[in-house]
Length: 219
Image (tube, rainbow, N blue to C red; front, side):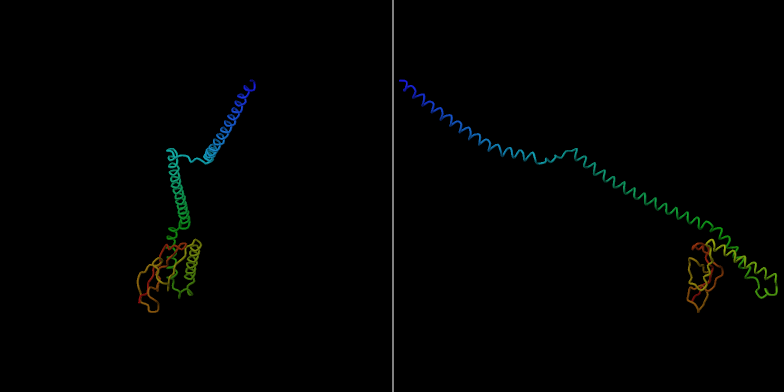
């Protein structure tokens, strides 16, 4: 009787063990399936987190970009104006220096013109002395020598200050330095050649302050 009662218990125990084994196997299979599905999702999430996110454009960013472009354009314009101002200042400085230098050099121009009349008078006086009477008249000779020495000394002063005479005899006529009073036929020279000088010209540091009065040849 006891043996009969133990038989169903043994069968129940075996059945329970089988059920446990089946449940355990199903759980392990489900766990493996879950892990397989989860890994791609986690990998994709990790890859997404590793990729840098591009900031979305916004009105504030666009405004700052426009302001930067406007500031660069304004800076370029101001730099150009600054360079132009420097160039204008340099040109003005050079002009002022040139004017100052010319004022120092040609400041005596009016004074020189007045002295030229004195030199012309001395020249006319020496030319008016009759050369054939110098040997027989000591006073006339002394006067002539005095006038000649005075004129020579005056010309030395002129040269020391950059004032030099222009004697263009047998030179080509130059309207910048000569003033033609008349024309004269002369077959021995080319046309427009200075053949006679009635009044010497003068230049001050290469600037003509008085043209020479001349006669010019014609064919």
